[in-house]
Image (cartoon, rainbow, N blue to C red; front, side, top):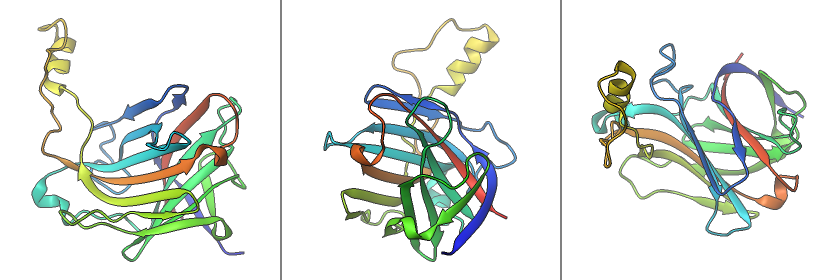
Length: 218
């Protein structure tokens, strides 16, 4: 069985899944990786159109201008890993892993990892699907197999945040956000990874804790 050893690059915080939609965002907070393939901007988890499924979205390489988006690419040496804790101990019981080879994104899991924490291996026997990476402004490519659905490619940044007003609140010149506010990320793009998974594959019967990491090949 061939396995690829990878070491942690950077991660994003914990989501507790007890409702239908949860998000976590981290724009411009990691200067050493900002704009790089290991830079996670958002993690979204929500119930699919098919209510028996859960959708995971991991966005990377934020603040891409329209002129820069076509040149942005996933890195073959950076794995994106979605961690799932289904028993409440805040240790991953299952992982979903994705890594690029050529113009294709390959997915593995969900499966129980052989090790937890900052180092991971990919068990290629746990392959769950693959999808061609969509090009900027082209018709999005999706792929479905065994109840799972996959997408990888550029998307408009879906996260709404009024950074200027937030800074004004911190500086004491404003007391709250405006309605409507100004979307600081309007007109910028991200590279998105989307996986839809039947809930039956995720284990547990209650709350799921979800977090995502990017891990760089050692």
